Length: 277
Image (cartoon, rainbow, N blue to C red; front, top):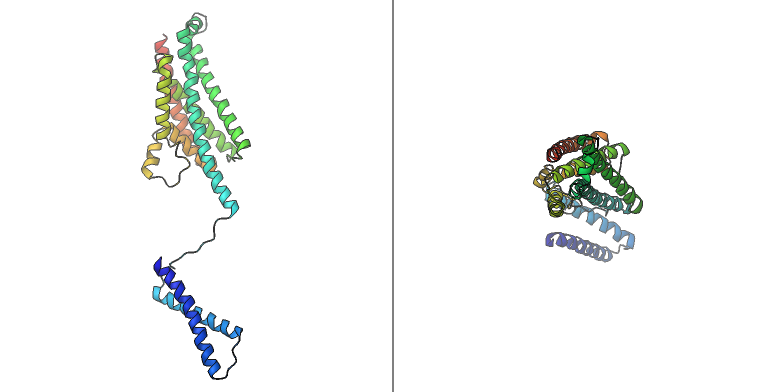
């Protein structure tokens, strides 16, 4: 910093000295001096000083790279992108919470005896449990759509390509529903569900990068850890949509979240069937 400041100060001081010396010499020789002449002298000295600095740097880049500050439109776009990523992280987080707590109704009905009564009807247990699982899926889907519409209206978030957004939402909903069913299949009572859901989903949300979605230039290792969770893949899809990506950009995250959701759902459903057999 000292070197840069000194260079600028020397340039201004040199210009002043050069104009004074030349003005005195011209006056001694009887040559009239005016402002236009002095300005021309200052300009020539400035050009000479700049050329001297360039030759001293031997073609290196300038010490200072002066850039204009981003315009209002660019600043607004950056803020909207960051805020959109934060809201996407919250949408994913609450979607997985809803999936787990909706699946908890199966445990609650089992404790209250209503599920056993349903099993006494001619309807097969597979159909009854399948209906419960479908309810989980539909509840999550409705919540996701409502959250996106509300955030778009209130906060002005533009979620991007509609088809790509639909694919990302589908993958998120399926993975959240499957994960909720799987998680609840290991819970024995509603008293266990609160700590289990709160602890597991909070840790998964942190590992999936949902709480750091607004930060830029995170370590590559952290982004790798994100992809070990369905939350991380869902977040990757949402970021691609917010960045203006199309169907091709979100196809991989969508397929992975769909695959995870199907596997979670199948394992959780199998455990539930064995429990209520």
